[in-house]
Image (tube, rainbow, N blue to C red; front, top):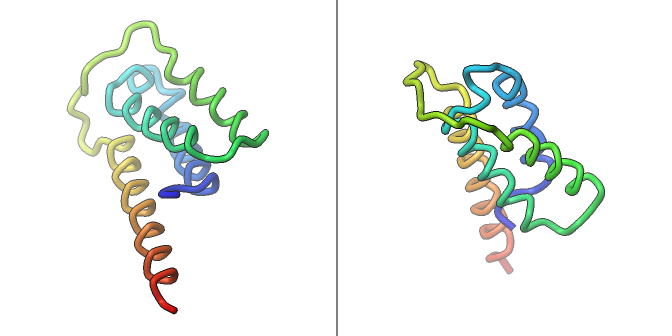
Length: 102
C-alpha cells in the first residue's frame, strides 16, 4: 500500500486551514490534493476511521463553484500535496527495501 491512514490523516489536518479559507476552498490546487487523499483512502481497508475521513474529505470536495489556480506563491495546498507524495513514495521504497532482504 503506498499510503497509510496516519499519513493521509496528517496531510488532511495540514490542509484544514485551506479547507476553511474561502478563496482556497474551491481552488483546483486544494481540490486536487483532496481527491488524491480520497483515492488513497479508498484503497485502504475499511474501518471507522477510514470511513469518517472519507466523509470529511467528501464534504470538503463538495464545492459549488470550483475555480482555477489563483497563482498564489507559495501554493500551500500544492506544497502539502508534494510533501504527501514524497512521504508516500518514501514508504513504498522503505517497504520494498525491507521486504527485498532475505
